[in-house]
Length: 70
Image 1 (cartoon, rainbow, N blue to C red):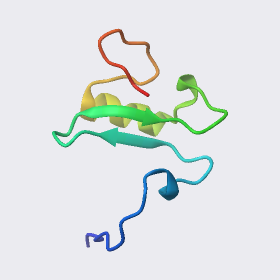
Image 2: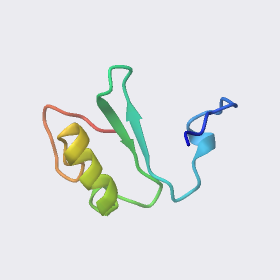
Image 3: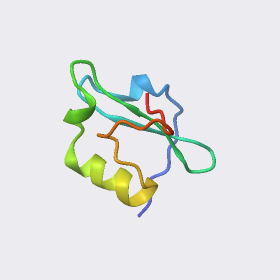
Image 4: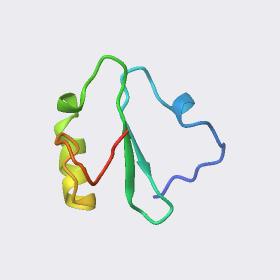
């Protein structure tokens, strides 16, 4: 069963203090990674790293000159 979103909320309002977030363009490309305060790129949970590599072809723990993640 698919859940439908019935209420629009701001991105940051949807996050808890320790949540990570992906920002995806309207064309389905990864635009950015929201990193919670106190964390760094090397702290990205393995599940998120694996998903970004398999779905977007980007390892978010590596520095890229062509791809900028925020």
